[in-house]
Image 1 (cartoon, rainbow, N blue to C red):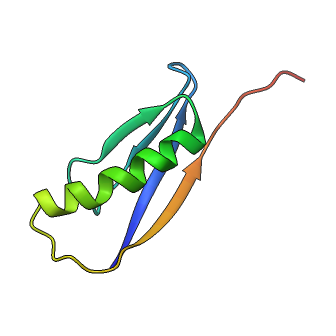
Image 2: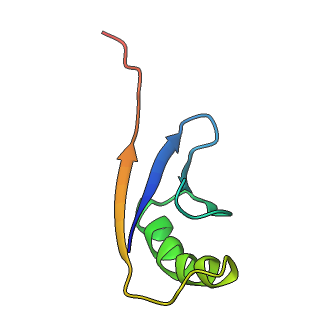
Image 3: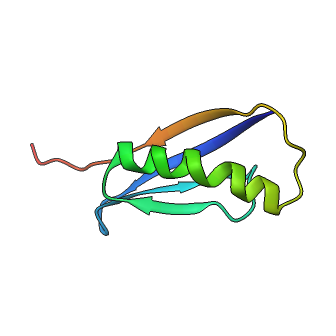
Length: 72
């Protein structure tokens, strides 16, 4: 199975947020992009098990988005 994980930067809160339309209940945040990836890797199997998903090898597809405004 392949699951898409959305990683979005919240500039106001200064954190990365992970969510997924494919994995109910996945909402994590961290000030570090790499730390968030690790948290997601540990949380996804647990959430899928809680949601009753069959245990199969997982492919996680990470999509990141960060928007910044700069002055010219």
